[in-house]
Image 1 (tube, rainbow, N blue to C red):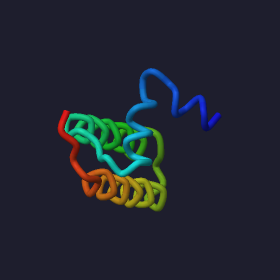
Image 2: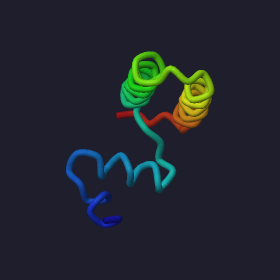
Image 3: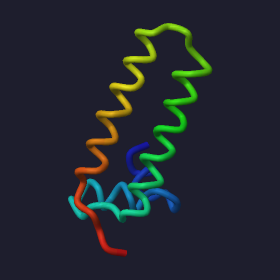
Length: 76
């Protein structure tokens, strides 16, 4: 599975760059964080009525967003 992920033609290069500390392009960062918040927001608003689950989802989204935005920016 590990080898397949690293050699995948769609996201393998992004994973290799991340693992080697080369960073990720800004457009990929923006797309990733945007998609993350859309999916988490949808889940928090539509899927669950539990306030604790909503808070956990938002905290996870915030943590992942911070991590992605602190990764070194790579020039294309």
